[in-house]
Image (cartoon, rainbow, N blue to C red; front, top):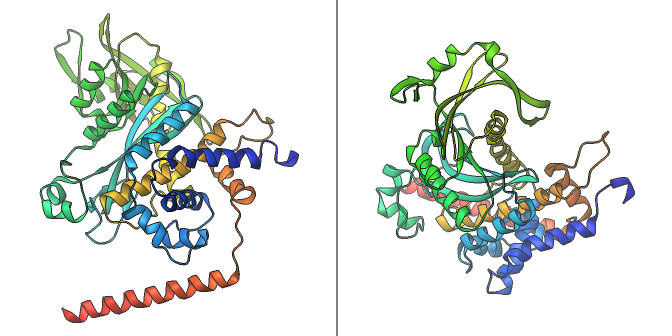
Length: 429
């Protein structure tokens, strides 16, 4: 494969096999174990929509029942499998200076039955839409970045205060309302308990505004760089005077800012003018207000920073820049492995699909991290390019025309049955 440089189909196949082997012991029976392997391969495949129907057709099944059982009734624990995925990723990407990044993403849905769905703001649409919201934890290290945990957000009034909805959606007893920062705290605590190596935590304003999250990180002696709104007040001078951060930012002349890159971007280093103000300094307690100025508009962004030890400005800038990684992971997950393609309504189904998608995305992520240095005239293999090559050299399938015809008939028959049922319900009203 000299023409393909670092493409080694046999080694890539071995990595894919290692991925499914990581969670194989979580399935007691052989059938769901084999189906889970086919599910992950289907998520990595070129299938346009990663639903149980399309994944079953690609796997050579006669109907989607085995795929649906995997998400609905098969005996396996998605949280334990999630731990296996996290452990595998940390084995490959672990670094003591890594950053944990927390953020949420929306999954647009129709109807009112999908667990956690309601009309709510989601950045996916840029407005309030009928959607579910998942809170995720990403791991960003010098070796790569990946999703390592997930939590489904349950709105308080429309779900947690209505036990009948929770029961119908299969939400376990004892699961109640938790804010998005509280879900982030759960995931950070789980990462610590699992021995995940990291040095910092970052997140956007939703998480920076939560005092409990900040206090928890300080108690655990974990440094953070958390975005906050322009109306946040911080203590300066004597420690008792509170001043809005935007007022402080306006007092800093442009010439006093320092140019630093917060990481590489698609068009080169993301260079911005930065300033920082020390708000507290004690032997084991160092606080700063970090300010980023947009080079074009002059708009300011603000971050509350804390560390148990003194650190230079460029360290805080690097941590702040890590936050964009999770947004890119959301885009990659949805575009490459169908993170948002699921058609399940229950608590169990959501967690199982998302866990399988995280495992599928881990495969090209690890392959990308293991790539040797390339010719400077060619960029390194990206996750998207690796998935494309995987489909050519490893995952290519050939199914007989009769199988495709069978699925065409099956789909149209099921759609006709669903249409008749829909008409009957409307006529009965």
